[in-house]
Image (cartoon, rainbow over all chains, first blue to last red; front, top):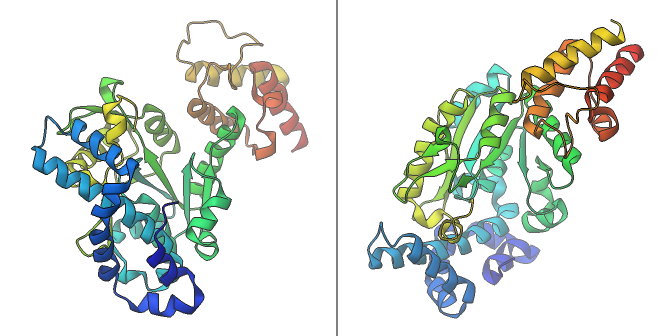
Length: 293
Length: 85
């Protein structure tokens, strides 16, 4: 994990944790913004990212804007790690660090008792923050993905936080993935919220096509199929950061669980977010390489 | 419900889900699994339909190639579950 020594000192070393909580979030954010250009100068990975962003946005943005977005992307990626490191220390007073918009959309479905799917762009924004912030608000959350194993997640986010929500990893053989799908269904039948990230593909079925300012992409047919099988309402959810560094979690009104509705409803929101917050997307290298993101 | 009726019900469900439903569905046709004709999402749909149709609950540890790979193995598994209930 990227080292963020000041944030780690303030939020993970017990002696400094009360001080860490007392310091406003924007102070940390401005510190990251000020050191990011230095990181960008010496980090090979940052330079590589900048290169791919410029290639991906060559047709849609001016050279100056491309540089702005590349810098914003670097700040965002560093800040994302900071939020993760700080979270165990600030979760109890998370309203200073996280702004939740559209919670009423989720609350309505929770009252109806049939579960809900929180649908995010797979490589867009800080969707990991959504499950944690919502779990902190008392919802039962399950996140599904193929990512890192729980032990590493525990180390990254802290033990306390990990107890509040469940992670379903579908790494493994066919039958293991099958069991995970079954568990997703069981999760929803007990009125929990299932968070899914959906990938975009460079080619695909025309019915899954989404238009964006960077060209068309195609939503993952398997996830669309899964949503149709699970048959619970879908809440599009996007997480970006504001100018003070606070994570803005926006939950949109529910969509009917049909592929057509998800492609038009979620797809257009996703395209809007990619247009308005390109620096929050970790997709550019894969876009240039014509791979799924 | 006898074995034949169970088999017929399952075959009807598989036929409904199988994209190339003009192909003959034999006893040994791999339905689920790495070689199966249904992908994992359609497989989940099959499992949910089995639970609903036969009033059974398929547990985590029962989801494997021995119980669910072919039409024949699914029929035998459902018959065992029904007999145990």
